[in-house]
Length: 145
Image 1 (tube, helix red, strand yellow):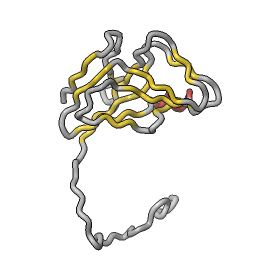
Image 2 (cartoon, one colour):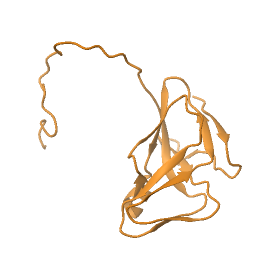
Image 3 (cartoon, helix red, strand yellow):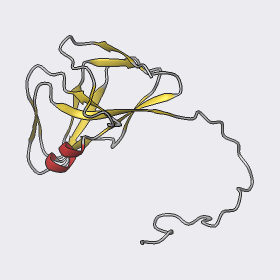
């Protein structure tokens, strides 16, 4: 599948996959100088890129696992959503969950982008839903094992 992209900033890094089986491609900070994210604060980090997603796909912005576990930095909204008709710059709202300031370096990989298919559904209001074994059980109702 081909995804077209545009460099909004000439210094932007092209999205890259870390391995041949990686689901997400890395997005890098397109900044002129290092920025500091104070504890418990969110900073919008530009990537310098805009993309053109194919119809019936969505771009999902996820945390990079090492950055999240070692430095406590992750997207503020947990998973960012890029709609297929959005043509603006991809910006990562990066939140510092730690007790100390974290620095983002120029060109540092700050998030990963997964392109996935989705269904655009119609909703129909009904009086009853079909029965299942689970029924209305939620939030831990299927057990802890």
